[in-house]
Length: 275
Figure 1 (cartoon, rainbow, N blue to C red):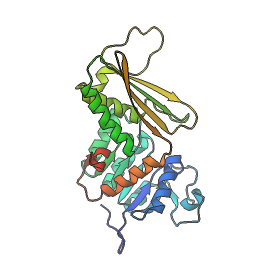
Figure 2: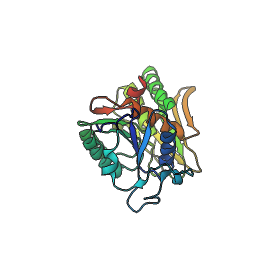
Figure 3: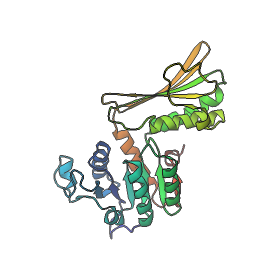
Figure 4: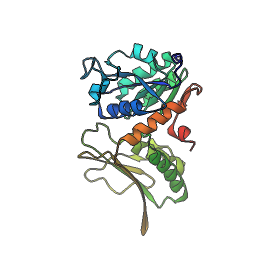
């Protein structure tokens, strides 16, 4: 891991995708944190804001940190990289962060099996903390979903309904898939074997034991997730509503701090929160 500067005790953080909504939120929270310091901000080559002071990007006074498009020198200064970007970018960042021995906090969603395999390879050399959702409430909901799925019998159907803003590009959301995995674990099954991703037209009756997903998109919704257990004569609904994306950013900062000094490997927010 990159050594801290002489006399400095706060880990240095690089924020990727800083011109995006989550990137700006992360950069602002790191700047305001008494425990972390912002040492770099990245944007794709040719992206908006490259070369500008990130303080200006955030509507503040200059802070002396410029937006860069080359991750190598930025990661060399860092003890942690916080990354909410795209699968292709995240896979590249995972390898580079591992070379720099920086803790890599990944909140990127839409990762496929090949992406996860490359991230797992990077985790052999560095600490990676990955979660489709980094909020405390959602991670508690995961535990509840697992327990309820285990407790209720197969006569209860499981449906996961999620809603996000109109700009979200992947569906189901990473959080919905995490909830599906938790429900499948509670039932003792493998999610791909029982996942029902959509219904259209004459679909026939619901398959017993399947876990259904519905994705709704519109407006500026930060994130809403319902896990519905529908049985004969009753329904149990577990719900989480996010009204401010800063909850995810705060979880990521907590993960970046927690990861300092941890052994190489891939961790989750359950590890960070001691759940």
